[in-house]
Image (cartoon, rainbow, N blue to C red; front, top):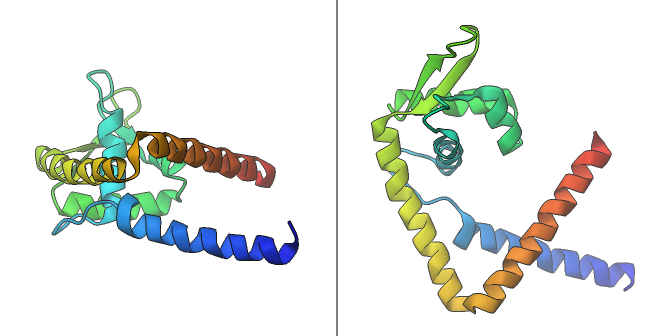
Length: 153
């Protein structure tokens, strides 16, 4: 494949990627929770267990691959909306943890249902075989991202 063919293919991938993000993969809209806040709350909720009271900002920053300042900005916004609360770590009072409030859990549950229903509609539309192929390709993309990140470290 020559460079012109690669450029044309890259442009097509970019168009399809943007379309995918806008139509299928975007977090559901809410009156007060932004898509990036939805993602943050989902990560926090997935990490909370009976043994885990809350999640550290640094952990969220690493998982989401964004700066601690960006995480703090979202936490402040969600705290104002009464969706998150801060608490101190029992072992080290200097460490601040965040956890969802009951209102935050309720809002996320509704948004999560919309998000997964949208993905189920996609599965119905493209079928099981192509859905599995999409997962395979997305996994390759994730591997590529990790490889690029390791090379840049």
